[in-house]
Amino acid sequence: LLKRDGVFAFVVNLSDTLSSVFKTFRRCMLHHPRLVQLAAVPGFPKSGSGLRNVLVKNGFHIIHHDEGYQVIEVPAETKENCLPWLRKTGILAGFDAMLPLFENRKLAEDFERMLKSCNEPLKHHYVLFAGRKK
Image (cartoon, rainbow, N blue to C red):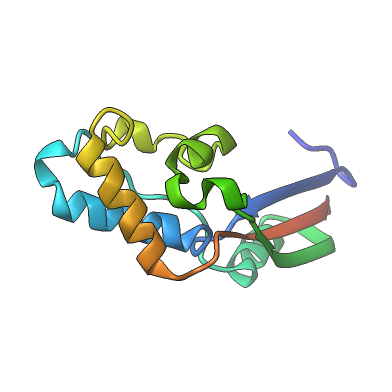
């Protein structure tokens, strides 16, 4: 639908974005298999270079590319009980359909404990592209 010389721009997370949250969530699913309500596999691209190849193959000339990390600082007052804060930020969007994190106290406590033991900062790994249609 994009006309010749039209510009297409987007930002997308890469597959290792928020890895500490995804690792913690998978660990919770393994520790509480009876509580799993739904399973999902994130479909984020693995790399910016792979995405670049798809764009070029589909007739785009790359006019801008940026890849980076955005660290998410957990407020000091929520570090001991960050699950409600994570929920408010939207980081956990969709996770509540897979596990009852907010209805099951034991599960919530395990999630908090496992996330702290992960010792990785919360960060988005993103790639931004702008391409002109040839």
